[in-house]
Length: 247
Image (cartoon, rainbow, N blue to C red; front, side, top):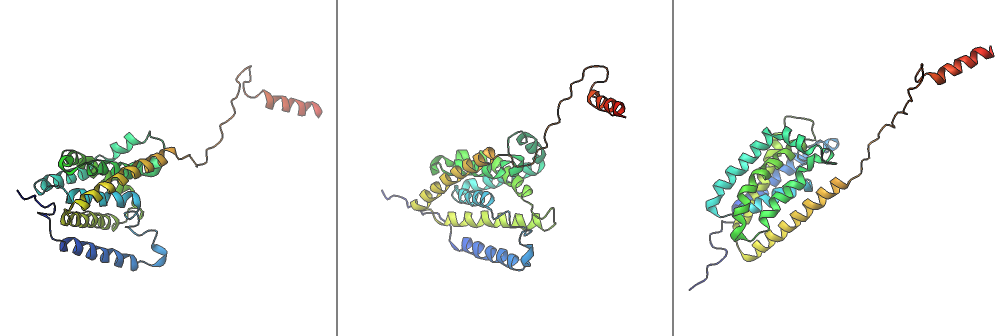
């Protein structure tokens, strides 16, 4: 009996290449059109950081390697998670605020996204679907929250559309490329990348939690002992009495 090829049913390569080249050209053009002094305020500056970029690439690989019959459910769950992230972001901030160092590091949304995407991607393809679908909801939520917190333009109108375009381009392009390669080496490479995602998530999260507070803290006020008829003013009154006696 012939053994089915692992590459059977794979998509053509050209959609992924078109997305990768076309989207990359648009992003590069938007970067080059910026004046040299405005690179810090470039809307996509935060999207292309490691904490944002790596989970987006992992999400694209995860979606691209899912069975085709599960793609519709995966997209619906991901969009539902993104919507929940926008709606419940304030509740997320309240839950994460007591965690040391969370508020100063985007409430650890980046490391959480790495873990939520890395855990299902590291599993064998046969059982990956059962964990991937439930985790797409919280993964989409933390990615949406990370996108909102990564606004370096201070609420410029161009930030959210450009950031959404870049993230959709990254996920869709990587998904098409992952779907085009169904060979065993591609599956092994995806699981290796997933192990990196998990390690990076733990390392980034642990580093943020262990970071020392560098902000200036005012010294505490000295405690005043409240005793006697003129509590707290004895020293001042004694000095005034001495000054009067000297005169």
